[in-house]
Image (tube, rainbow, N blue to C red):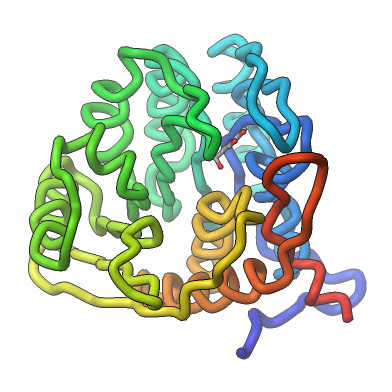
Length: 275
Ligand code: PXL
């Protein structure tokens, strides 16, 4: 595959802001975002939303960062450093989503924003409170360039059970109607074939993306990596379909390079880029 152009020595790289939670196991969350950006030659700015206590087996709990501190992290990096794209991951609560939406409207309304609507960990542990879904739909989706739910998140957000390509289209339409410019319905958990099929919709046209399914239990952080790599490509000026095409190839390679860690699920890995 071809990669994004790297900055020269001493040259300031493009910047992507990750608004996300910390994973103490280092596999997902903001750690996956920073790794993705770094290995793609992009400087990661960080607004930490929550600190999870987790390992490869599950999430024991999390502690949220005060709303005002999250909004201030966004404000200070926007005004001093500047950014070309951003992505959201774990936002934990309705209040935090409101604070992120407010800060976004005030400080970076024209910057491409990828919203990965994280609701739970791969172990099924909740990462968003009960009011969070309404807040995502009403406050953050209308600001998003792209939303990237998986099938579980699709069910929670628009109450559609995706089982085939027809229901995947219906879900993409319903998600787009909530206000983002583009909606991507990730079909990775749809085990109907040996291909992973994602569907993108902009309100008029559908784009399909297919990649080989990589059979591994070590896929922690795959969704975060896809959203972060998409944001990096958008920062480079790619169109949304081209950015997703690039990010899908990147995640496939990261899945092939994933490794065991602890007693549960290991992370997808971009470290292949170093060899
Ligand atoms: O992969 C989703 C995710 C995002 N952010 C944090 C997480 C997880 C999954 O566990 O812990 C902080």
